[in-house]
Image 1 (cartoon, rainbow, N blue to C red):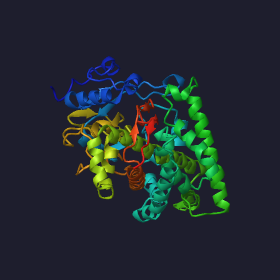
Image 2 (image 1 turned 60 degrees about the vertical axis):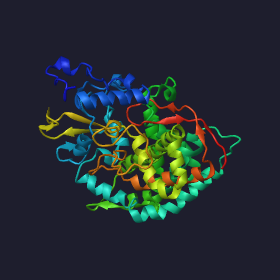
Image 3 (image 1 turned 120 degrees about the vertical axis):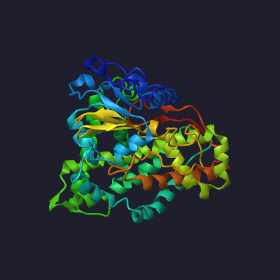
Image 4 (image 1 turned 60 degrees about the horizontal axis):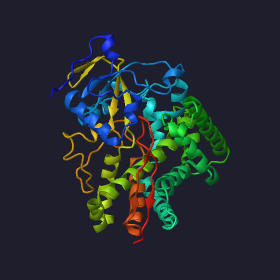
Amino acid sequence: MTEHAPAPSSAAARDAPNPVADISAQAFWARPRPEREAAFARLRAEDPVSWQRQPEGLLVELGVELTGGYWALTRYDDIRSVSRNPQDFRSGDGVMFEDAPQEFLDMAISILAMDDPRHAAVRGLISSAFTPKQVRALEDGVRRDARQVVDELDPAESDDFVTGVAKRVPLMTIMRMLGVPEQDRERLVYYSDAMVSGADPDYLQGREPLAVLGEALWILHQASTDLAEQRRKHPTDDLLSALVHAQIDGESLRTEEIAAFFVLLSVAGNDTTRHTSSHAAIALDRHPDQRALLLEDPEGRLPVAVEEFVRWATPVMTFRRTATRDTEIRGRAVAAGEKVVLLYPSGNRDEAAFEHPDRFDVLRTPNRHLGFGGGGPHYCLGAPLAKVQLRAVFGELLDRYPRMSVGEPRLVVGNFVDGISRLPMELEPA
């Protein structure tokens, strides 16, 4: 195999599907996971920094300005290198895989699409809620939430792991951090789901994707604006109050900035942990030897196992950067202004970075996976909290239902989050 397929040398070649694997096609992201992983493996071997055509997307025909093709990074080292080099690869020109209306990006992406110094200032405010001290303070509440969720399971009526388990603990934690009243939480999580399900025909049910996104954004922004106004008059100790009363260089955050972060945390704080939990439940069911290892010492082995859960699931699949100057990646000339897309599922299966990467191994160590990003200024703020949630959920499940089994998942179609919308389960008490 060659280290690289030939570089595209003409406009026509740049608009053609990549001959090794065309990951710009919507159909690619609707394929089963093993097929996608096989395509990434071919790219790692034959064309690790591949030129890919303009991504197909449901928003392309709705008057969105298109930004053209991109370089796709499939190797672990390249993804980490670009992630840790914001001087040469900026986020402010957009971070989503496919093009979307600027209004959507402004209302939903928040600090993900910021560069320093603004990024550092706003992230510094938010990070106060995710320090090790704060996460330790939250841990008792997360454990109570996990215990309550498992307490409320009924083996005689067990049905769906996603709605019964995976989505409930992160919902309880994040909505409590934001100060959302309990009666509003389920509704807002429903609209958070819409933000990452715009390519899923089962979710859309014939509706226009832009209309679905617009409705979800309006609802979430309105909720944030109402809550922010309440916090201005009556401050509390939640994260939203902290943002409302914070200042950067003597100026308060704009209402739109607070609302965009509210959307980001509502989505990221729920979806990543939820889908990791669902993929981990499947992995433990399909690999009984690994479940047996965990059951030998759940408390001692879960911290290491959780890292493997995240690597195996890789719930966030893609982010992009934009080159700020002419540069090279693995010998490929990347021009200033060209897009670079980071393919985390491929990096987490890279044979050069992980021993037996296709093996689910709850004792894998070291495990420097890309499940929370490749490091650098945009590394996931909520990673420590997500790990606490996963340890709490599976600690309770392994103790109470060590022989839990799950059926075939209903996958969410899309190129951003590797989501599971439904996962039948059967519970057998210990």
